[in-house]
Length: 550
Ligand code: DGJ
Image 1: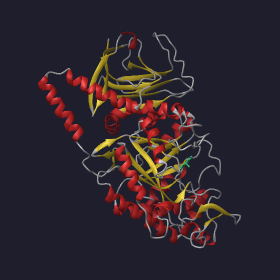
Image 2: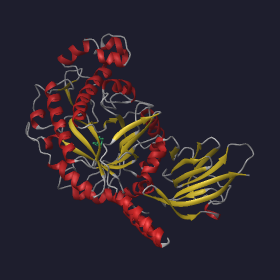
Image 3: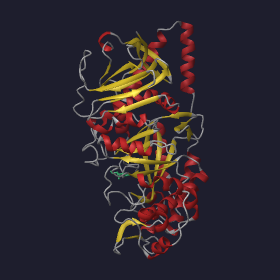
Image 4: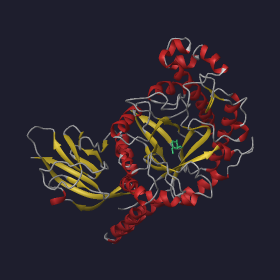
């Protein structure tokens, strides 16, 4: 297994070998080019989410970026905990760390801000050569107000908890509190102001506004204030942007009136926070979503008012300052996981998975996320602070936990920009292993790429056995009419011409590696390595394949 640090060393060794095998003049030129590339510091262009023909790219330093991330545990963003974070995430080989900023820590007393953790995080991220995504744990964290400072948490009069239909208070704050909005917004704006001043080199790429916002324990708020709002007309701006006829919540939304009312309140609240933050420093901003089972959504199993599948159109209309509705994916089953990717991959929504489980079977879903045009993927709870969110993830964060993620990150890390660019151009397809079928097909017009999972598959007549635990994935990108970039794990990839009767032959199968976006040749695959298809194991390997027919 090659982790990112080893891969980095190999790349350096390889680069120096490459140099010494060149004639002297070429060596000097190549050294200058490499030096120029190394010296080419970020151009300080603001990270931006761009869209073209329904495809998205997160532009970092002016080029599409593929975020290979990890998120720390909830209570790890303290200076004393960070030494337990870096070794784990470095072992995984991330290029971006997701880390919370806690409102209670940032504003311990009303109006007194403490940005020291922000500076610590920026310094340490730069030392470790990774980017950051900041998570604003404001009024909403997993639907509760647990990260609010005491002056909010204890103010039940102005920032009450939601009242359920039976009159009991539940552990979620109301979204209509002007006191909460004013304070949350002021703190967030202060954070964005500090960040802008402290981060001219754009270490921070995006900001998550609140965390898994929604209401647990009641479909909506039934307090007297909420009842009054619920009986009123749906706000004009929502009617207009959703192209609805005016009316009360019940008249406009019928069966989904309660949840739509709750979703509007939360989305509108968050939008006002994001809008004010962007006015100061316009980084891309997103919300993370508690997803629900898309096949069997059982009532009460998701946070009401969050941007679940049913509420996506409403959220898009109510929160235009939020760039991405990003699903948190903690259900490892293939059908549910990939269905949720289908749902959130929309022409008006970039594919981004800000949290996924850290058990081994989740790592392969990086392929499916990339296959959905994903701008990023991040595994949750990856640090050595002594906590793990099992059974959603691994029981213990050790080498066995990090290895499947380091494998997939070591494949895509060295070519992250290349992959993001190919994806933005619509040239790439990728899939994760479906244990129910063992084979999948990617259609590229004149060629089909057939993926079969599980090894060994020596010889041509072998049936794909599937992997014992589904851990395979494959990616194929068109570089030219008969030329493809290919990588996979625990799978065989073969090509089949669309033309009836024609047979494929490999003209050239070249293994190589990308260094600073430039392809470097390592060897040709032939004989056992390619006679019966291209067999990928648990070694990070990337191929450029030229095809012909006979
Ligand atoms: C999703 C939340 O967004 C995370 O902060 C964390 O609480 C995980 N669930 C569970 O560990």
